[in-house]
Length: 79
Image 1 (cartoon, rainbow, N blue to C red):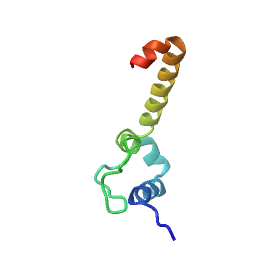
Image 2 (cartoon, helix red, strand yellow):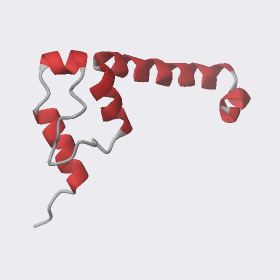
Image 3 (cartoon, rainbow, N blue to C red):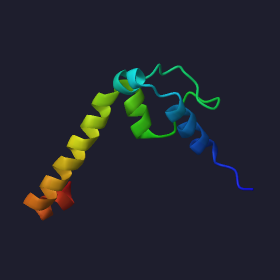
């Protein structure tokens, strides 16, 4: 049987411990998941620090990239 990688285990435990309050406000950065304090994912670390605000910032960034792509493809490629 194939086992999951430690990174997948960390992410799984992170989402298992996520409550509504923690989803909105973030988590304690010293908390360990699967024995590690490093979440091994930049987006999860951003969420851990800023909570729901991080999710909103990611969506705004992706939306801005999409708009730049539609507005000026050459400028998009330079970015």
